Each structure stands twice: as C-alpha cells, then as structure tokens.
Length: 234
Image (cartoon, rainbow, N blue to C red):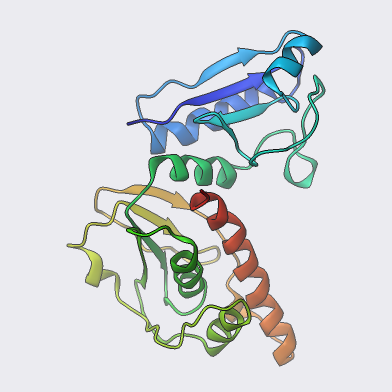
C-alpha cells in the first residue's frame, strides 16, 4: 500500500515549486504512481487548525518529515537544513522508507569496510523485530577497526562483522538498497528494490592523528544514526 504524501504550502512562499518538485521526484522513485497532494494554507486560522508550522511542510501518512512538535502554527516560510526552504532529499526518502516498511535493508559501498559497516550496526540496533539489516561491497576488504571502535562507543558490538561481497545477496529477499559512496563509483544493485543514495564522506580516507581519524568516523556514524532513526522510528 502506497503512503499518503501531502505538501502544505502558503500563497507566495518562494520555496513551494522546488519543494513540490523534490517530493514528487522522490515519490516517483519510491512510491511510483502515487500522487502527491498539495494543500494551500490560506490564513492563520487554517494554520492553527492544521497545526501547520510553516511553508512548505511535507506529511507522510500524516507525519511531518521532522517528526512531532516542530513548532507553533505559522504562515511564514519554513527553513530546513542549512537555512534552506526546501526539505533535503534524504529526509523525504527516510520518511517514505519508514512508511514503506522494508523487511530487508542492504547498505552498499565499495569496500564494505567503514560506512556500510557502521550503517549495518546502527540499523540492526534500531530496526524493529522482523526487519533484516545487512551490508556488502563490490570490492570487499576488511572491517576498519575504527568503525568497530566508534560503534562500541554507542553500545553497538560489531566485533563479529566481516566484509561481504555483493554477490552474497543477489538471491536474497532484499527490498531496500541504500548506497553510501561519495567519492567512488557505488555498486549497482540490479534486483527489484527501493533504492536511495546517501553520499557520505569516506572516514577511512581521513588523515592526521588517531583522534582526528576517529572523529571522522564518529561524524559519519552520527549522521547515519540520525537518518536511520527516522527510517526505523516508531
């Protein structure tokens, strides 16, 4: 069943067209054939009645992209990350994936050594019962010890992880694939699945002191966790 997707806007908001276009693009990939409904909030009374926090607001199955308690009702323009008036693509994807409720999420990068390993660990810790979380790479190598260390800092044991080849999952029931490469050419999944691409910097490429490298891993870990908390939120 396709999720309900609604964009609420106010007349004259300069971000409306870009926001609607972005939501429709993501919906066309993850929920093809389903219309995005646009509702115009005409005045302050309507904003209060709808608990509308500003334009544009996107609801997936009635839930705001950023969750509950965003702010008081307002007819003003709404700002998202980095002061943008358009919600980031990853946020729309994460909320739509939550509504679609995949049963087997596969994280992919090239070496399956850092980003995808941390995503697997965080995903397993957050995913509800019955949801499988895996990771793989097109050129699997070894699990970076820094990935294991920063996962342990947040209570996730990844000591049993190993780098796996993408080929191990070709015949598995994977219904969601999330690629994480930024600088490299990401592996291509040819099976039938919802696909999203979250380009995150490779912490294994960081140089400098041991603490500086660990901080690079922590930043990527925290960004992965921020996104997956939306995907697997209750």
